[in-house]
Image 1 (tube, helix red, strand yellow):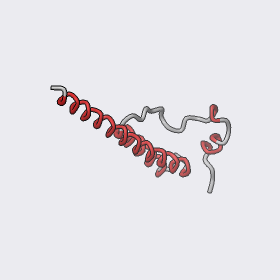
Image 2 (tube, rainbow, N blue to C red; image 1 turned 120 degrees about the vertical axis):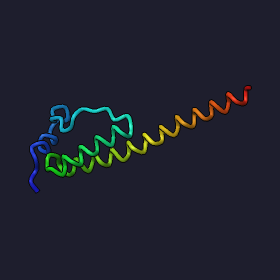
Image 3 (tube, rainbow, N blue to C red; image 1 turned 45 degrees about the vertical axis):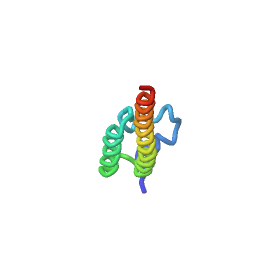
Image 4 (cartoon, rainbow, N blue to C red; image 1 turned 90 degrees about the vertical axis):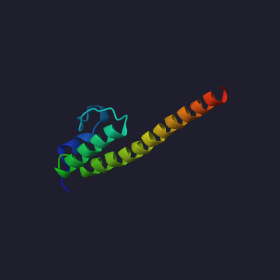
Length: 89
C-alpha cells in the first residue's frame, strides 16, 4: 500500500504536520455528523489515509457517546431542579 504525502508528513513532528481536515468545533451531535460525513467522503475519494479515517471515526464514536451522556446529564439536572422547585411550593 502506497503512503500518501500527508501520511509521511504526519510521521514527523506533530506541530509541523499539515492540517488534514478543516478546523472545527465538535460540540453537538450535528457537528459530529457533518465532520464524520466529511471524513468518510474524503476517505472514499482517496484524499485521506484509511488509517487516519479509521482513527477519526473511532474518536468520533467516543465523542458521540460523551455528547449523548452530557445531554442526558443536563436534562436530568433540569428535571431535578424542577422537582425541587415543586417541593418547595
